[in-house]
Length: 429
Image (tube, rainbow, N blue to C red; front, side, top):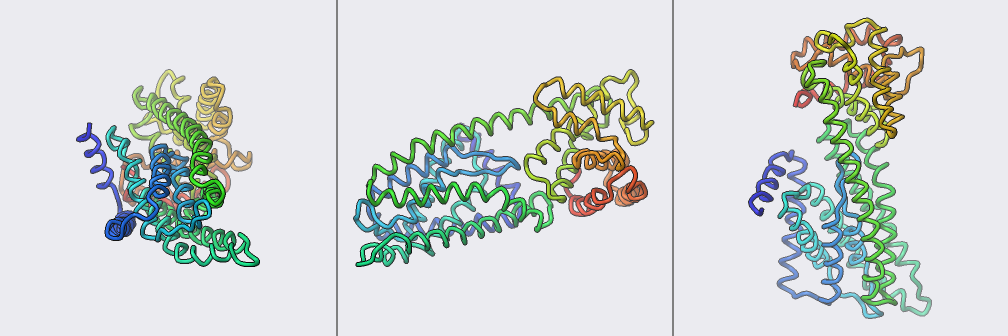
């Protein structure tokens, strides 16, 4: 069991790019510094450190994979934030340093990751490193201010507003840093333009950071009057919420795997070229991201692109190579309508069915954006297939440009041209 987990972790590290490795090294150095400093100076307020560390580990154990293969651990992040922002515990000033926060965060995250490693489901090293790095940076900026801020709450005109203002400001800065890091990594991983990746990450991170920030601040403030009981009061509802989200994310992942399996039926039956549906899906999602589609729209686009040719199963004689771009337009439209009807029978993918049904519409018929994207991506792959010949790719793009404005949406064609230029080294993987 351990050997299996180790092998999976090794393969995960082998797939990392230079930006991810740099992030992991930076987080690793901070973790070593925090643990070494804490070991040398001793653990201050050990009960508090162990309590928050346990909650961090529990949050890491229940981590989630969100749309776009984003790994998050909101409960662990909220617990780390609460420990970082802690001013006092039951009116006793919190004495822990920034490096002790880093040590507790690192040990808690490692403890929560161990069970996943044991069963061969290691966390993504870059996502884990990013959580540790942003938590460490916030601790290094905030902990030196904790003592003076606690003093302000006890002065003659004492109050919590100055402390809350500082907390909110530093959290906002760290959220921006986290989004920038995520966008840099995302742009490199999926070969997206940085501006597109930044917009995408900001849109996804805003609600998550708002929830984590509110939970962390409330946890830190509640510890003032509730002492260690605050951890128990906050832990139960937060963990229940995260488990519910995890089940939902698991259902989504299983559903996507089912759709991917169904999309291969046309390949196994010899109706389309091997890998066609996967390539069209990858290219369509990349173009959708380039055009700024939201994550729910990208998920629908991925489903529709994977199943865009499923209507070919109704054909008595397969189209040569499965290339619908080279067949009669009326036949291509019938294939799309039959595929949409098959998808609609599931009872839960009506929007996806509509995208597939309208993939053959001309620009004058104003099909949905996802349908326009699939039409262009499918035509490109029908013309290029599994070839890596740049001349062939250039000829295919030129043909699509000649049809732009009537058959193909010009912005989609140009977005795909940009994507192809970036994806050329990885498009055929």
